[in-house]
Image 1 (cartoon, each protein chain N blue to C red):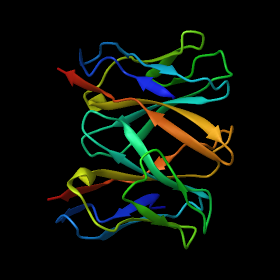
Image 2: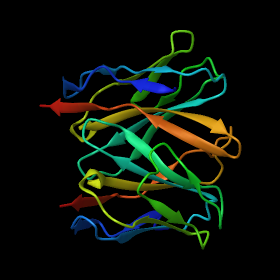
Image 3: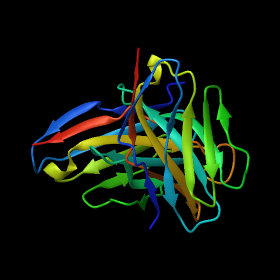
Image 4: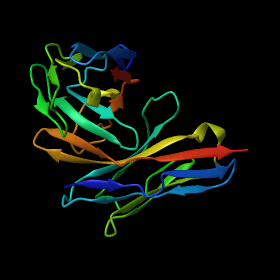
Length: 116
Length: 116
């Protein structure tokens, strides 16, 4: 079975500080993609960042970056210069491929609170 | 572009009632998905479609049926609602699920369903 584990149910960070959210996964697939999604109180799922498993270089997107350790099956998200608008649930997910379709497997999420 | 829209946003049902959730996308995406989100859990795949006229089961398909009569619409039906189906339902779509730069799944705003 393919699983995603987010071991931090809740985290808090002060505005302008840096925070790292952890994610580990388990799969026997060699070809997959990894994602971090943000879900603010509006409930909308928003893609934060994506990483191709075959790429060694860590993805970055403005204040968001990942630390992808393929051998350890680890995919953490670092948020720099945290802003109040970063307050949300964050879900780690990975995508595998079966025939013509892709499937996303999600972790249980980390609730991030950014404080003044 | 409206992106992915879902109708309705909220619904309360009594046990045994039936209803249909509508998902519509205006991005000409081939692939569409229905997920459910429960407290303390990530999103779980219910059913998906790889094109007009096709449907397939996901991780938790029992108690649900789907139809994809038009490319832009993906319907999720509950024939006889049960309290265990109380959840938030998300629809998503993607252009190309394969190993490409276009495999991001775009999500709708969700439907909160309560079954009494």
